[in-house]
Amino acid sequence: MSDDTKTLCKYKKEKIEEHMETLKQIVGNPKFICRKCARAAKDEQYLCKPVALE
Ligand SMILES: [Zn+2]
Image 1: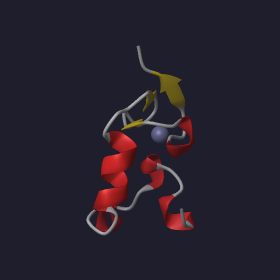
Image 2: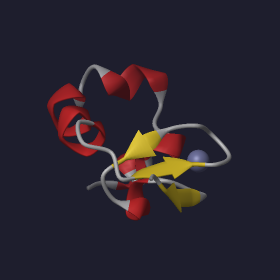
Image 3: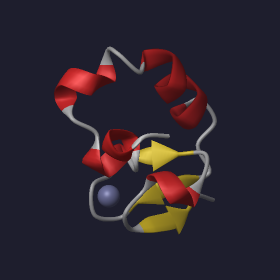
Image 4: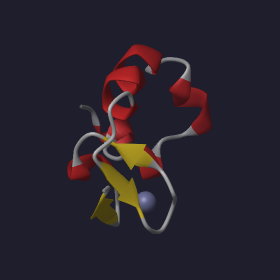
């Protein structure tokens, strides 16, 4: 991933549409949630304060 797509937490609103297919992969089967931003992702690397789901 490039710098502007480091974590979902840092995702810019205008980039969401552009990276929709990638985002579907990342959030489609979430295993972690960010305790700061309430975003979810399959890998903790996509979140700034990841906490495992379950
Ligand atoms: Zn976050």
